[in-house]
Amino acid sequence: MKTRIAIITMLLSIFIAGSAFAGEPVPTPKALATNAVAELLSEELSYPNFASETNLECTVLVDVAVKSDGTLDVEAANCKSTCVKEYAIKEIESLQSDKLAQHAGQNVMLKIDFKLLK
Image 1 (cartoon, rainbow, N blue to C red):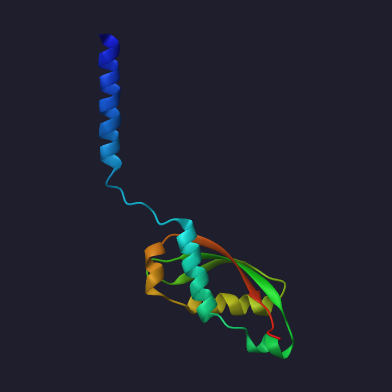
Image 2 (tube, one colour; image 1 turned 90 degrees about the horizontal axis):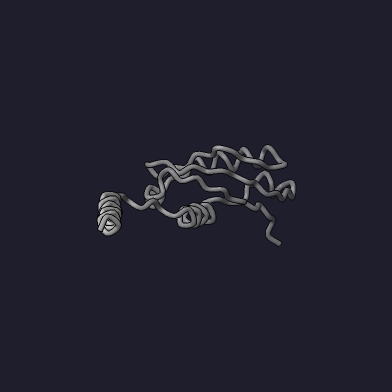
């Protein structure tokens, strides 16, 4: 009899705990945030003019935080060319999209390739 009471008490507590946390919002998966930021950057970020004049090709790795107002904040960036890195940071931080506001608080790591079109 004591075993049955213990089992019923455990099941009841699991049910109550599950019900208490059922109303919590589910955070946006990181993959959705990454895809949204990557899509925005591919549409808005262009190859810099100064790089095309010198035939400069490089890759910039950025760690981007999405703010609640839909803007982006570059927390870290790495590139061999400092001028391309500074260009990428300036351009990314100037972008804003209402679609990104739903991903607020997410950090995204992206690789941006600046390649010459041939």
